[in-house]
Image (cartoon, rainbow, N blue to C red; front, side, top):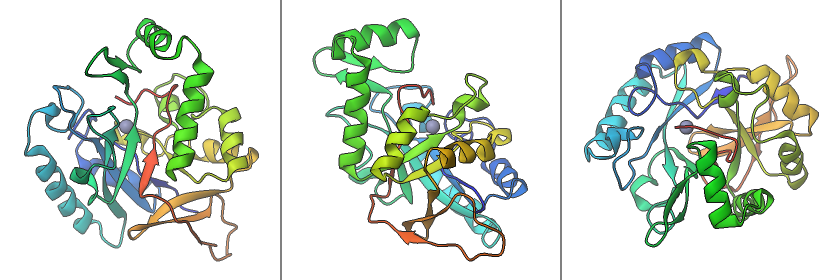
Length: 265
Ligand SMILES: [Zn+2]
């Protein structure tokens, strides 16, 4: 099938490049759909969010500019306007009314902890900070943290994202989640998307064929795509000349960002 990518960050937040450059790159790579997913504003100052976390008009300008780009590429590339929304315990989350009318949301966990008492633990800061938070919140038990995350994902009905962002940055030679988790995801029948979390147009479809081959080898043969406003599944590799088989899923219009070996900001 033609690939899609619903995870990209242009210059609205911490990405590099104007949205039209991302759209051109997507067309050049033969993608059928491109979703923009800028970081939604956080309730405190942040250098990597829309409006850098302080400009209340940034969200409106983001939607307006992308609506223009979407109209420009109509019939060539299906552009979706999404957001990557942090879940902050008791403060904000991807199901908040502020963002539900976007085409989709990517749910991210960049922080854990209790904001009112012990403060927030930034999960993709330094290795030392990660170890300290893991000790404080989970007693150092990484498996408990991973188990908590994926049990919550499964219960939520979200789609899981397979993400090649670490490969594009040269940090690793495989996508995340790790293969053992992808195998579990296949066993449980949890639907997935394949995204690159690109912060530059050159990474728009980074290592997609290799990632799709790995997914297929682990039993994942379909990926979700946004069919209008509903998620549908289609084969990762469609034989030439065969009509696509599409499957409707009753799923939340939300992706769960791959966590724990995922640095997105
Ligand atoms: Zn991201």
